[in-house]
Image 1: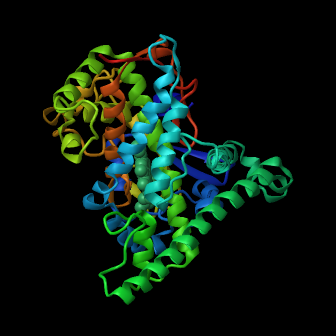
Image 2: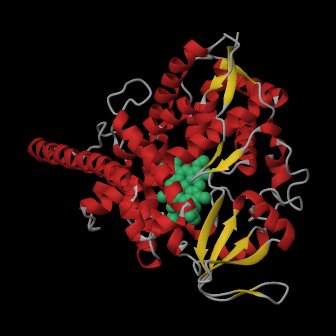
Amino acid sequence: MIGEWIEKYGTVFGVWIGNFLPYVVVSDADNIEKLLSTTNHIDKGKYDYSLLHEWLGTGLLTAPRTKWSARRKMLTPSFHFKILEDFMPIFNEQATILLDCLSNKENDGKSFDIFPYITRCTLDIICETAMGKKINIQTSLENEDYFEAVNGMCELILQKNTQPWLRFAPIYYLSSVSRHERDYLKKLKGFTLSVIKSRKADRATRNSETRNSNKGESEGIYGKERKAFLDLLLDASENGNVLTDADISEEVDTFMFEGHDTTAANLGWTTMLLAAHPECQKKVHEELDEIFKDDPTRDVTTADVSKMKYLECCVKESLRLYPSVPLIMRQIDHDIKLGNGKVMPQGATAFIVIYFNHRDPAHFPEPLKFNPERFSIENSTKRHPYAYVPFSAGPRNCIGQKFALLEEKVVLAKLFRTYSMEVTEKMEDVIPVPDVILRPKNGVNVAIRKRA
Ligand code: HEM
């Protein structure tokens, strides 16, 4: 529907919801830049993001202006490259488990939906990196409850978003949605708080042992060499930033929410697009064969990742066509003048449609074509900086983008080093569904064949 409106009314137009909620729909690079490039319009959409508050509190994603800048400053060092590098063994281990799980699907020529396998892998990765806890969702049913609660909560958020009457308290409390929500929240919050509690207890024991043995500073979950995000938050809270368990929990939950479905969706779309474009898949295979010619089965290092130039172009092109987060919102803080003399009025909510921005032929000729070469250095340096914003842009962009790209390149390298993939469905028939994230309606159906 939004696509039809954009065609009819242009890249900036106003919409009233129920005569009292003014929205401005924006889908062109120049006007997106006006909204995202400064700290002026830093608050997210009031009504829409409040759907996340029950689960995520006001962690970084949903934090109001007054809280956001201090939190962002505190959390930014946790995404430093050196820290992300320490997560490489987790990315490798979980990607290898994914290959094991797929082994009974290989070589039979039948297509199957690979998306649930990928989603379980990214959930295992984010749980271990965010909380330092292995939940083995790929291989066992011991934490299936938690998996169901994460997925169930994402579905409920979508339901509340698409059924606005559920926002009226009396209707909501009478609905089954509220009962399920209470159930899921109990499991999710209980899980995070119990991990925080046991982690704090471990640290206290270890600190007293360290004091007694006069050893150096405190250690992470895995010993001195690697810390989970939770460790870094606990360090920050000990170093003078006062963070309660509830504060820590909302940030960890935010990473869990933002950090697994988004990467799973992009991994799914990239897999599907490569399977549908054998000529591009061949180039990926050649690149990987060259990088891993010494040992095709060894783990992926950060040095390998930096050589995966073509694979990176494929991931970026996949995020252009199918951005995991297809739209975001901002509160317009003061009137913004447009070139045609009109204004985006103060108080309205800007609906920034990343999906259509990425399909603007002015910046991406033949926009529907999968063409990874668009992202080669020569082809991308002159592009408008706000024509491509899958991780949003400006001061409130995605804090996890480097983490996401590193994780995805490790998983894709392992997948495509091992397999050739084919699709039975034509890309033109695949329907993207804008759930909380953008996914293919019928999953990612591929047949996988082990490479010689
Ligand atoms: C392909 C993967 C990903 C995509 C496409 C993506 C996209 C985005 C987008 C578009 C935003 C802006 C949201 C808004 O303005 O409402 C955002 C924010 C955010 N993302 Fe990501 N994300 C990805 C992966 C991750 C990962 C792996 C993490 C954490 C480990 C993460 C953590 C966050 C957080 C905490 C914010 C809020 C930042 C703030 O408001 O200051 N994201 N992401």
